[in-house]
Length: 443
Image (cartoon, rainbow, N blue to C red):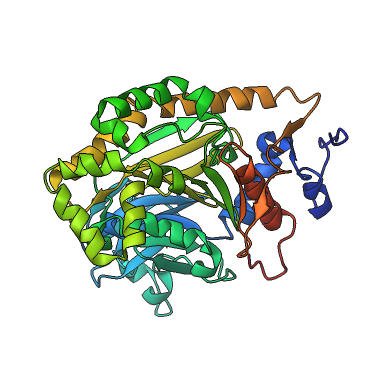
């Protein structure tokens, strides 16, 4: 165990931050100190790539969503020209937000403070009392501020508040192919993220929302028991969870792709037990057409995997995106001890109504206010935050599996499903961005 550190007067320079996360350990201040949270906003959320939304959410011109990039309020919008933009949600006059609602469709954003009006492409189109501005006033210099970098990975829109970031596909690395598991599971690769969302807030640090394959046996014990019973009985919701993928003697794995991107890898497990899901689909209206479409669009090995995985890569993209079961999940830090999680069920645009209904019912069975599992997670995260306040001995252990993990030829680190490979991956990227940031800010 590392020596006890007194961080009460730390200025958190590079060496100080590195001392908080030696291999296999994390100091509780990483989760409880507001000064560290402020640095995270500056060095992670205001510098690196963040997931903003899926292009299908704003499929029509003028559609917009209100989103957050760290402490920066932004508008995710498709302009009348069809271009997707991410704009700072702030009037250029006196700074009021110009978009007050979570979503909608409009040609304009209006500031209700002094009446300045902007197009949905961010251009300033009118000011109140224009005679009060002299000839030097240039409307072109007073449009809504665009976020410096916006890139699209197969419909997934990412943005960065800094120009100095590496290309998105380089940042995603091996995680990109895992995102493909969700995209390619939809015929034609067409996802529909327009079925609403669940929003939850818990009193805990944002880094607790990790990819953790160790906790389900305990936190979700009753849910796993139900899944196994339903799978044995042929119940529709159990068909995608045949057997227990989290058992200590199971074949599921954890993966670290670099840059903090991680995966609970159920591929071999799902392939082994995929027959029940296939049978369910074959007996669902539109299911045979769906299966035929997968094999027509992809080689047989990839189609086999897509069918077994049911569009669930179970991957986390650092720092704010997770693709779990039938949902896209955005993690929004609010403060050092408060986090918002927004969950969007994902449908397949070209699949039958019945298949999409199955996806929604499965999502609802675990997530949201009536779900059987997400409330468990929120409760345990709050218990963790309370426990971290007992910092006489401030170190927490994330060493499980360190001595048995392996490194594959592409650099991916692999461990057992119960190993804390994802937690160590997260802290490695956290240190890279917090303590080891290059002078040009590129990560």
